[in-house]
Image (cartoon, rainbow, N blue to C red):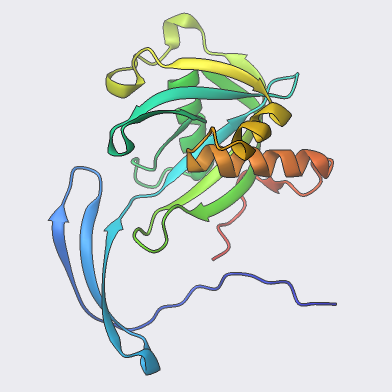
Length: 205
């Protein structure tokens, strides 16, 4: 039997480090890294607090998509609910539950881990966990989060899961959490949901 492949954490020696720009949310940093036989190289990257995203499935196995403006790419993108890990010490699933309530006015009775990934490992240390949320309940109107800025007036759409996969294959959806999460949810459904990890599963790297 072939040994299962897995990514491995590595702490190569860093001979110097500095902050090139301290931003409101992200910092641009520089580090000199000793690669051994490869020599010492300088790498500049975005230091990121991390994030969570949620693939929301209703009882008809439709996925919730939210349309949001993303200025760096000058586009309105259809996305799944997501947000930064900007509350120190907050568990990942709790952050996801908060973002689901704030962006979609929903709570969920069932939570599982779908996928963990690094959004841009060549240029950022951002790690992102995608959850699957089912068993939905609407947040009472008086308790709903007041949205602003890019989140104000966001359009929403409930799309059958197989149709959402088709949108990805046709090159019509570009948000990475939506692409990763929808494909992972479709694969999990094809496997009878047997491979889902617990919502509090450790990040195994």
